[in-house]
Length: 326
Ligand code: BTN
Image (tube, rainbow, N blue to C red; front, side):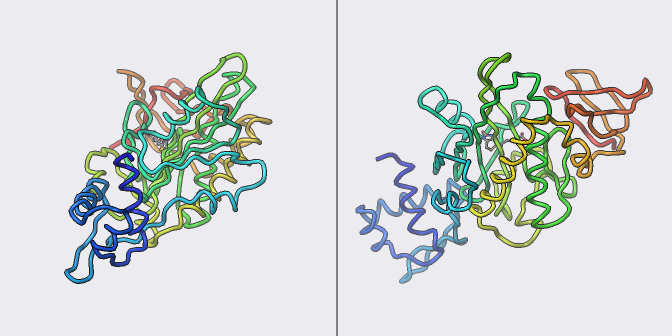
């Protein structure tokens, strides 16, 4: 039995946030009390804090709401998620979905989820951190038959789906081109789209979504350079991630289906209603070049429009990043 599945059983037993004696845990896990103590130490490495009180036992400081495939499946619209793969700890859900695409039959709309990623991938080679059972780490498989040029704007549409779901919970979420979801300029969610297949034919698209949900604080974020926040910090409440996943997945399927039929242009106007940068002075970094201008929304294919002294310039994804002018 792997170390992570041992940790999983302990986490599942303690997820209720109630006290459990060392003796009870040892009995249920069929291990000695010394071994229980060793596994409790492992919880700390995952960022799960617990307390121990003599005579009562151990309890997690925060009750956990673990991912539950049955609960998620109940809420999904009929066409979605033939397969829901849930992992406790994995390197990256995007990497896992890419591996599954090679090793077994994966269906349109299948999803991979994880309580925690040890090598979560972000855009532009950054990493993405996710404390145990506190984020949404989702990778969705989408089969796309329109070829590579039809994909333009897809990640913006994914961002729009997230922003709409989050704004229904609490107003004020915006989109920072191309696809960061921000609140007061701080990042709440990020999207990493990875592709494989034939650029002129069938593409296999892995849509990776990370959302900070029930995180009030975490040492893991010490290494994160960008300002960040979470749904819990914004609202002061914690959320059932299974319910949120259902809302997000249903909205994603709806928007991706529309995108597949009509392209980005049918989302252009509504995307601009959430545009965090609109009218701001910005720098666009392209490799070692920096272009200065005023952000002016997005084009019909999702490219960023910048008013510069030369006129409107258009930027597509890849190496482009934005900073507000200081
Ligand atoms: C970004 O840099 O803004 C993109 C972050 C994307 C993170 C998600 S979490 C689920 C999926 N698996 C990964 O390894 N990355 C994406």
